[in-house]
Image (cartoon, rainbow, N blue to C red):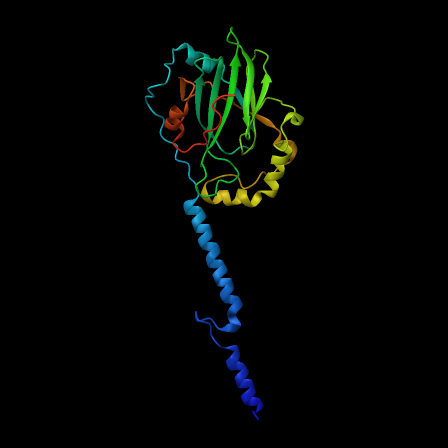
Length: 267
């Protein structure tokens, strides 16, 4: 019959058995916690190291396919270039603009390269910049009569009243809309209500993105402010190149970098 002392000693020995990696069993919770912290730290280090980083090349001095400034196509592209109205809290700058004059149709494409997208920028191997596209159609008098914009996988279209083309640019994601478009006309579920909700429920995604590049920590304002497109950006004098082609991809790779979104070429 064992004594109380012997029993208590056995209990103490049992509680201090060690695991294979040297942690006492009664400290198993600490061991798990340490491993979890190590995993989290390694994950964050991996995301920061392998997350995408924008590598926008230097502006090429001579593009063999670029139109001369005095070419009629280059003059028209600059004259019909839209004015962008950017949401007042936008943080990502517009880095590059390429205008593409279609050789057979009365349409000019304006490819816009924004520094980044607010969502998903931390995901390894994703495209580290944000390309958006809009198109201006003109008539025989060279007046703008149609506008198309790329809107999250869809192309929006509206007739235009032969006046200066104006485009509203969504905060953070840079989806392009004809100026003062009715919200009810946006395709569901790609509405501004939905994207505003994503700035709230997607906050962890936004914060992760800030680990790989400087960006916003949140959209910390109301939905009403989300709809305020009040900062004008003229792009006519910011065009990096004007080309006449139906396949602008070689030029876009030269100006935007090889790794860009490669969205729709024509509406």
